[in-house]
Image (cartoon, rainbow, N blue to C red; front, side, top):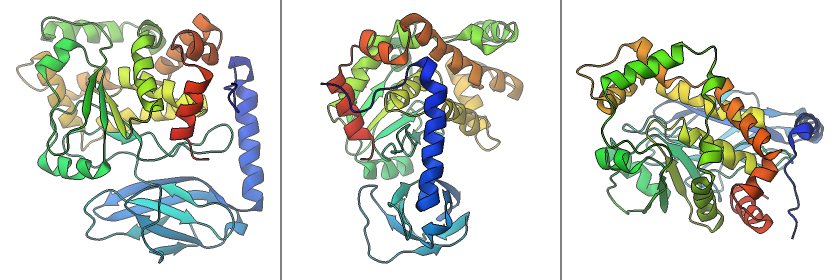
Length: 367
């Protein structure tokens, strides 16, 4: 059985993106809203934004504890001009906003990064628009850095999400040195090791060598990830579990940017998200790991990982932890060069059948 939508091969990518943009513009011309975003700007206060035509009219905002239903009949706000702020005082868990325009379908949006104390790069892969105008569902697949430092407050928040599966792609030795832990309703932990399995912990000398290697390169494309091809079978295991319905799920490595960045790129591309948007998602790790209010936490993680006697300086943290678009572009380009197209990679490297991909899209993409 053939999929109703086939992913475009590399030569058709630009045309597909252009077509997608034209469809979005045509849709906006007759009403509706597109590409909604949500940002938590202070406790209980959110900033909502989206693209809309004049025919969209006043957009009613409903606050809900779930992405697949509206909890109340009364909107908390009607938006006539964006961006707009909405206050939800006294909340104890995650909020999803259902945006209902006068004309067009209701759109769902929520914050991308979850407000956790012990995992600063824990974020939702939902809300991205696909080539054919659909949206990836919120609240089903999360990407994160390691879950070693989660607090009691974090678990109170996370246990309300109903997470069933946690896929840990760290090596055996990484997991042994810093095992995940969970308090409350315990999900299934699935070990899917990706990367070298170092017997001993990385040292300060290892950090120096890594810094020297990065500084000696003209650009990050030299460091193009081989994870996608070398560990295709491991990524396939995760995708198979998602396709079979083990959701909501979390995939994570140590920092949540390299091995996890490749996983996210594979999944979003398989769902039909344009490559330029996939790269934008990859770069969010910079925003979440290197922001002024989180960089000290990132430095502390590096200190523990490399056994440093003191916190590394900020320049070192930025050099090691920065994500650059050239890196993921080169990794995806490596897939194209090896397999001819991403579609071929899904079939020949990940061994995902048309029915697997159809199941994945049915579960993770809004109809």
